[in-house]
View 1 (cartoon, rainbow, N blue to C red):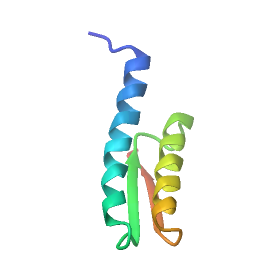
View 2 (cartoon, one colour):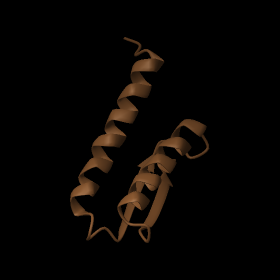
View 3 (cartoon, rainbow, N blue to C red):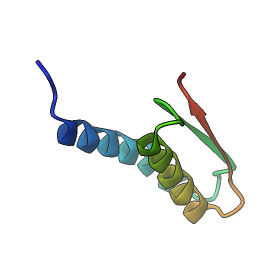
Length: 71
């Protein structure tokens, strides 16, 4: 069974939001965070990493953020 690309995109965004959401609860304690994506050579995954970094920096502008590729 082949999953449509639009559904894959929706699921990736949903998972990303689910991972970043709990960070908001730790606003005052967030010092560092990281995200691992499929391939940082792929523009789609780069955008996911940038979105996670943007949200983390909204919570704490001095947060140390790391993004890694699973490759």
